[in-house]
Image 1 (cartoon, rainbow, N blue to C red):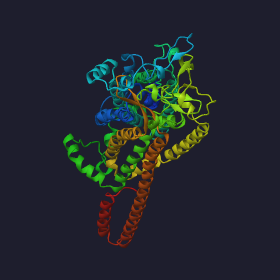
Image 2: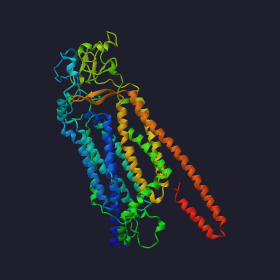
Image 3: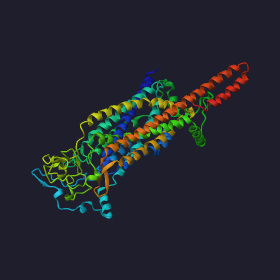
Image 4: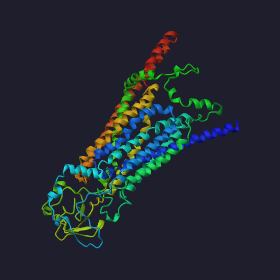
Length: 612
């Protein structure tokens, strides 16, 4: 081999390795952004004062965007410059992330709901609280004028969540070409024995993305949303308060920047490469044929006569065969059962991963000592307290009250987060007269055993995730082995379409709608009307969330059991058929013509069944 050809081959290998490293980094970047989006669901819900059902729609917009272009990308992508398409997809994803963060700069500072005006002067020693203020209940709870409400909503930008919806949809559109085009490009130009190792490297790197995404989400959730724009000393709530909004927008700028950087190498990679491991003299030929290896897999081996001629299939012929192929595919009971099983499992997984941060926050983050039906009592009837506002205080009796007014507090000392309320008459109803009748800002802390229970919950979650992951590869192999070779691409495409449509979009919506039904206290929007939920019934929330997840996974296991029985029956049927065929061949060895006829008949029957 000449020195020039050797250098050329080394350059080819380096480009393939560059593509491998770039694709692995893209997998990390997209998983990083996706996990951060999931971890920011609660912050976005609070910032835009929207219910969980609407948050489900926003979260599902990623799948909607993916479905809009998946057919075009899957079909036309292999015929075009695949690395550049991946790079363009990354640019679209980055743009979507920046658009998600845009409302923060278009809206004014976040004004959290409060029932009073907190005085931030340091030299203030005592304030008169709402219980002693001269106002009426009607002024606080009156129904606002419709025209005034519309004008207010337009001024504060209550529809800014649409930017989040559109930005997340763009993220879904941009993510589409990464997996199909990236994996096919890598498989086309690498050695077949190296492909599994390369895929393992890519997925291992991708697994790191969710870890960093949730870590970033946890950190920014404790950083105030308007950091750098307001005086933090004037903020009277902390990150444990249900009105607190973290710096959700900052994470989308960071993840968008990472995705933007990951797109750069793909614009410098060629459309095709010589097959890894082949001699340079065959390089030109392999490069020319490299753009069409996927098309060859659509044709069975027996249709090739060994010559150099290739049968050209027109678009009309492909379209004519599409509907019959679909009928063949869905007549396969194993495949249909696999799709149904996977669909139910994905419903449970998507619903769980979307609202799991909210579940952990609500169940393990605070105490459930609030009863809406007993807000008004004789101890606060003379205070003319508003029933709408949410400004919780924690009394020394361990009870959370919706506001200092509803706790019957008469005076306060201190400023900002250090404010303490005194002479709270409602606290005295549950304590002896000599006991402390004071309250502090914020909800009461969680119970002492919550930390221990949370650790058990996380340990069980890890074990469950490991067991679930163990079934991923066998399930994928069963799917591949249950269909005819010429239908594999169509089967995988239909699986992606069905599962993403019915398994990716509906779960966040119906999970969110059912979770909304467990809300104990709804917030009030700045212009009036119902806002985001401030406090959930923890027991009802737990039963709803875990009931849905457990029910869906239980149904999944039942379907797996039915599928297992069907596979065993099919294997026995094929074994008996093969045994009968062998016996028939042995009985007709003296008459080759008859034997050939019987074998041919059996082959036609075998083609109707899968290899399982």
